[in-house]
Image (cartoon, rainbow, N blue to C red; front, side):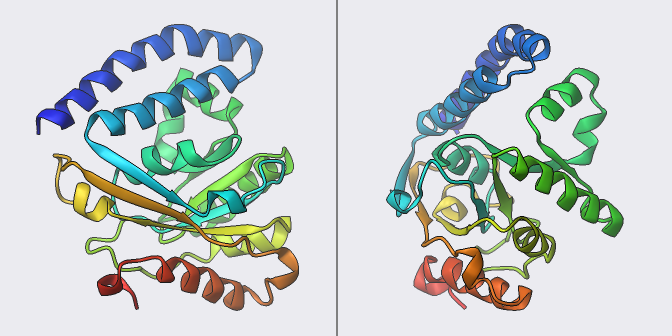
Length: 235
């Protein structure tokens, strides 16, 4: 619990600095770079303060000059601050639509090309795919937690179809990511973080020429993510 409090205190201290320096600069220049780097550093540093060590596998397979769609499993609130700072170059993500109702935050997220998503609305889901496509066309990576919500036990849930429509539409490589360990460090129903090691495995990129039909691509991504899970959590 003590380390968790330290992490939250650190984030609470970093947020005003980011707001005072990063928000005005981003708003005036329309350049998200400074705020993005500061956010990624703060996220990853906070996780380390909480006693979480991050082990990375396969990152050398990723060409920083290329644009990718990263598709990951999702088992904990710690997944984004652990994973996103590892992505080469800037990545867009899908965020809850409700956050876009906050005036200043809305402008910052739009400048950052973040994608609003309403999980319970099919038409909104189609709109999110279109927004994600525009972000990718700008040269940004896209990171998607393909189950759409966190798994209680660490086993894979059914995948959402939208990310695979997006992949076929934008024609860029897909990189499956397996996160393991956050289900022990910070399970879905627990607030406190337990010190431990988290593994983030980047699998071989799946090139557009190898996608096949949408269901075939979904099966390939699922098999890759599943292969990186601990044996007791695999399908």
